[in-house]
Every structure is written in C-alpha cells, then in structure tokens.
Image 1 (cartoon, rainbow, N blue to C red):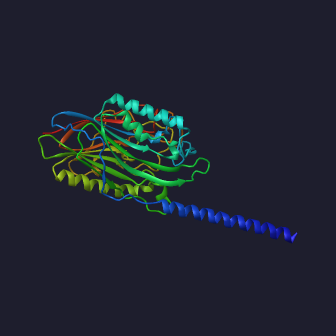
Image 2 (cartoon, rainbow, N blue to C red):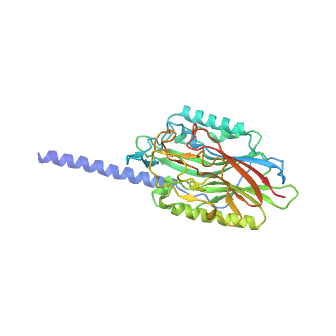
Image 3 (cartoon, one colour):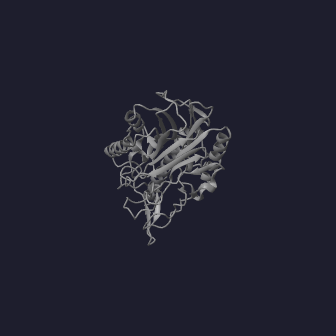
Length: 369
C-alpha cells in the first residue's frame, strides 16, 4: 500500500511540476510578446486626397465602433458583467465571435449602414485584422474597399499574444485599431499613446489605448482642422486611468486651440456623456464601470455636441447579456467634442444594435471664417 501511495504522490508531483512549468512558460511568452507602441508615432496616410476644406461649407463625420464584428443582438462578451434589478449577477459568455460568418455578416451590415450616410469622414473603432477573436477576417481591408474614394490612416491600439482566456472560448491573439477615413486632404497624422493600467496581468488584456491626430488644411487660412480619433479605456475600476487619459487629451485640445486651429474629437469615450447615465429604461442595476463626462470636464472653448436625440437613442448597450430593448443597461458613450470656432449638430443613429454593441453617431459641422 505504501508503494501505491508513493507512486501516486510521484505522479501528482510530476503533474504539478508540469502545470507550474506550463503556466510559467505561458506568462513568459506573454511577457516576451508584450510591448507598447511608442508615443508620437507618425502614421502613414494612404491614398491621399487632394480636395481641401473650405470655411462656411457643411461637412459630415460619423463615429462607429464595429465591435470586431462579433456583437449581433444575441452576443455577450466574457469581460462584461452586470446585475439585474432583482440582484441576479450576469456575465457575458464568449471570448470571440460565435463564427466567421457572424463576423462577415455584422461587418458587412455595418459598412452598408455607413455607406448610406455618405459621410466625409469616418472614425471606426475595434477594427480587426489577423485576429483569432474575429476568425482572421480582415475588417480593415473590408472597410477601405467599401470606401474607395477615401484616404485613410491606421492607429493600432490592441496587439497581443495568444490570450488563453476564457478557457472554454479563448480570446486568442489580436490585432486591432482605429481606422480614420477622409474624403479631404490630410497633411499628416500622428498616433498619441494614452496612459494604461500597468498591472502585470491587466496590461496583457487592456488595449494599447491611443488616439490619432489628423491635420487637414483649410483653404484660404493658416488654420488646420485637427481631427482627433479617440478610444478611451473601458475596464477601469473607479475611472483612475480614464482620468489620466482625459488629462492628456485636454492638454492636446488646449494646445491646438491656442495655435488657432479648429478641433474635433470623435469616437468611443467609454464614459456616459452629457448626463445620459440614467437616460434609458433598463431592468439592470447601474453598472460599476460607468463614469461620466460633460462640458465641465473639458477645457475652455470646448464642448460635447449633445445629439438632437441624445436622450432618446443610446449608443452603447451592456454586453453582459444578449440585447433586449429596455432590459440591458444602455447609455451614450460615443460622440464628438468640438471647439467653439466651428458649429455642429449630431444625431445618434438607431440601428437597434443590430451589428455591434454600439450605435453610430453622425456629426454635421461648419468651420467658421
């Protein structure tokens, strides 16, 4: 009997040692794969356009988070958690899209929706290429082919080794970023790195958050339109990192306005904007991830463009459960900030979250003479 116990103990010891080596090796692999993209990186502007902006003309821009093509109405994401009104906890199920066909269908529907808007500028977030979570569908290529008359720049904000979590549906290796498309001439573009959570484990799952800065000449002036494409952190307990990111963004806004430029910031702010924290009916408790942003958080001369229907149509739904209108928590996290030397109006487009956990936002603006 002692021999049997000894043998069992030896086998268990070998298995434990193998497990330790496996976990240690995996952590070492993630560390070797990890790097942060340098701040101030010059972005290549491809297929550059020649048309130049004019003061007094009306232009349009649209912001849309594609959600890597995964988020049909029945989709829930493993990192999203919530609590129903009766106290029942909820958590999303999936680490990647449910199928390649879903990614293709959702991405195609998103691009068809955007094509119908005929906007001059498009700011697209969570655009994947060569990623396990989106079954290697090249959304970047799909988008640029859908808008052949546009120049574009790419700012990478998620690049990771193979993420083996959740174990039943691993997120995998990811390459994703911000795609900015323009009908008008862009003189140069730059990638600015946001502060992120440097916790040893969280840094592997948080995006390499950033914003891009595109500079467009304005005919007959020495001013530029500075178009900033923004995607702030989401999974940030207490909003500490988001506050640091906002501080950096505001510094850039102040500097550009002082230089006499027109400034527009668009994208996914991952904050409830202009008082929409409790604007929409829900059968869920108020989620802990929600922090707020309004004009009081911005520098002088800047404000959020409150959508004309901003308290009627949300732009983001909780992805801890499949979507049912009036059940999921919903708010407005997508939109635009503008400087006071231009005029603007916005509209939240109600797609009923048919291809993403976000709805697009359309901006109409005019540069003052």
